[in-house]
Amino acid sequence: MINRLVTSGCSFTQGYGKNGNEPTCSWAYHLSKKLNLELINVAKGGKGNEWISNSIIEELESTGYQNTIVVVAWSEVTRLMGSFNEEIVTIRPQDFDGLEGKEEWSSYSDYHKYVIKNQKALGKFFDDIVYCVYKTYHAIHKLKTYLEYKEVPYLFFDAINPSKVIHHSYIRDGFALQSSHKEVEDIELFTRTEEYQRVISQHWSDYLFDDKWIDLDGAKTINELKERNPKLYEGLDGHPNEELSKVIGGMVSEKLVEEKIFFT
Image (tube, rainbow, N blue to C red; front, side, top):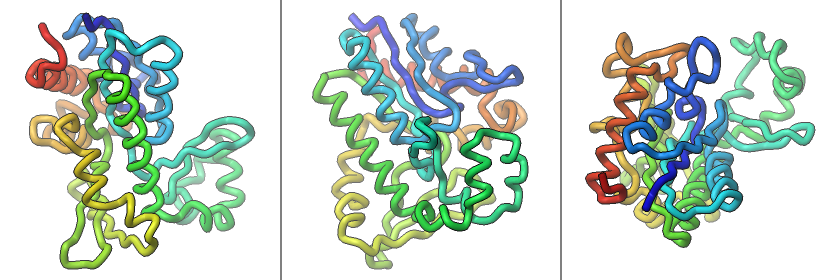
């Protein structure tokens, strides 16, 4: 009998409000209440998909995977996992596109101060968005394969932008990373290396984005769902508020029952 819910993601899953971490602003909190399950939410603000994949595996290997459901809201594709002074940090290509708008970083962590100081040199190592997609595909593949091997029921969905890229049939080796924001255009990308092409492919997409990957009432992401009614759904700094978190919890709950992953 399933009695435990394990979740992970970024701040959209951790829950973010006026007092920082607020569980009631997390869809995971409301999902656990609807299903009457013990919640273990290992989500952490600002983290990317490599970290999210690892966090679920580490949790299940530490505490067991019997009688457990896993639900993941995948984060921004461009959030790479790195290490700085023995601390795991998040690195994004867009953090190296100029100092404008990042002056406040000087008051953040030592990592952010280091990025500001060495931005031009670091950018050469972390400016490849295609690589970010490649790493995200591997992160999803690893967790999906692990859960299926352990026979742990699960559902995946997207929090910030769609993880699945759109392939352009009219451009050889071309595809686009979709945006969930109406005012932001999709990013057109090109795979120039065989290594990328073998992973960012239709074959991998068909495997990764199957019926365990759900939308939210037709919305591809939490961001898209929020933009349907920002006055009702948007919380602090563009995060989901408690009302939207309740709505998402209800949607995921219905999907778990509909797919017979969870029996009421």
